Amino acid sequence: AQSVSQHNHHVILSEAASLELGCNYSYGGTVNLFWYVQYPGQHLQLLLKYFSGDPLVKGIKGFEAEFIKSKFSFNLRKPSVQWSDTAEYFCAVNAGRGSTLGRLYFGRGTQLTVWP
Amino acid sequence: NAGVTQTPKFQVLKTGQSMTLQCAQDMNHNSMYWYRQDPGMGLRLIYYSASEGTTDKGEVPNGYNVSRLNKREFSLRLESAAPSQTSVYFCASRGISVGYNEQFFGPGTRLTVL
Image (cartoon, rainbow over all chains, first blue to last red; front, side, top):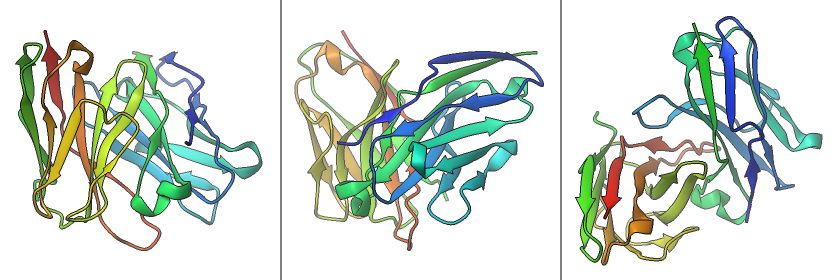
């Protein structure tokens, strides 16, 4: 089975600080990579995704992520966070035998708290 | 488009009771999924249905059953609820598009088993 590791369980930042959330996965073949966000009391929404091509992916709300194949990583970044970015962030991978069936493997999530 | 809808939004059960969580999507998606979300555990796949008429176990299927009633609907049943099944349950769906695997999530059902 795939494993997805998110290194930071809880990140606390002040507004305007820069953000980087780590994500590593265990599969060595072709992967599709996702970052989802869950605002308090809401369902998961897609922030950005990587399938192929440019390893630097831009998503909504100023977020971006870089796929580094040699490091099996897909870290999420934002240059300047806002209070409204307070949420839980999930990295997810689609790969291997489950890929054609659309199975996603999720990390445990990182809770981001931004102080105004 | 309502997207993915789930009912109920909240439910409290006693140990041993049964219930069915309903999920429907209006995006003409082929694949549907049930996840549970627990603090510090992320989302774990319970069951999924790659297409109408098929279902498969995910990571944590024990204690659950599913029915893919038609293309739109995918229900999750707890036959005899246990406190360990206290969780938030999310349904998701996925369409078919070349190289495209995004899943769309419903609003969730918060279930408490006493």
